[in-house]
Length: 115
Length: 112
Image (cartoon, rainbow over all chains, first blue to last red; front, side):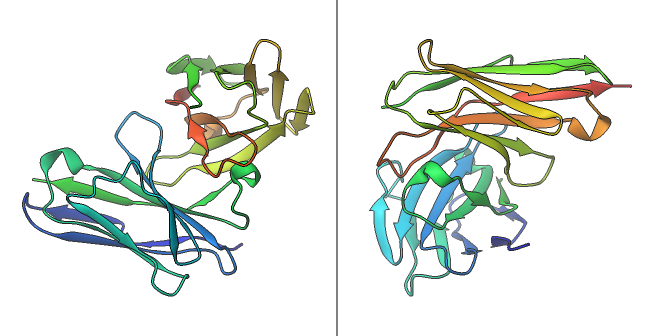
């Protein structure tokens, strides 16, 4: 079964340091999403890509977060500098269609702890 | 924008009994309602979904019902098993909208 690959699975970083997460969506999925999930809450969208273009980054804290999907395949989410409040699970998801009404496939996520 | 409310936040059910999780949504234009199961240390996994032109959908022990008038939908798990223990999220999306909005989740405990 096709999967969304994410790495690393776990990351511990000190505040003010830079951190990056990687995601490889299911082959052929043009739409890629990064979500943040704080413990005990539902996922919240950070950024959405259609191919290599950003479709929605309205919830992305752009002063410290950046995301790219240069060739329209895999994607990187970066935080610089990391803050204590950034501790969360960062989930990547992909979808075949740009419309959300066919569901997403999520990766296993990266658990970030900022100390 | 869409807002999805989910309850209860925690649910404990005796093994073999049924579990029901309920959600409400605010946007009457929403037309797709997926349910996700998240096990510890894993990403959410789609378990069942329903579209607004259908009132009920069933897949083995799992069923989802939708009441468009009341703008609420529910997940029903029958004959619960230990492996059903997880966090369940409901979600909703509107036509032409690329985003799925999630509820805050229900932690389901199956008691032996």
